[in-house]
Length: 66
Image (cartoon, rainbow, N blue to C red; front, side, top):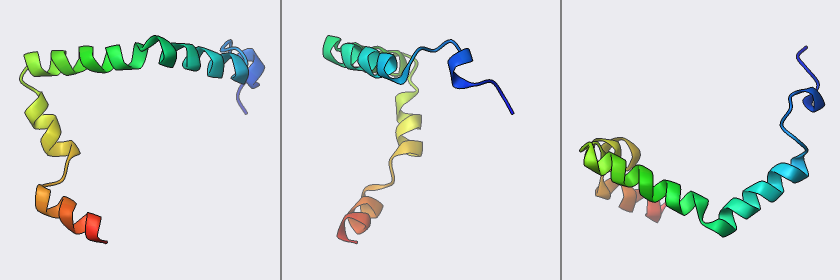
């Protein structure tokens, strides 16, 4: 069921790994993170995301003790 991987047109696993490594070295992910963070702050949406992504401080402490 479905197409063989070689027919999907994404290149080999080694090519994907090499590109990921190049992007890491070039700082692409850090730049993307900074850009998205700035956009969220500008849209005043960061506080809402923090509420959903991070547990309250007391829960974090309990988890760290476990």
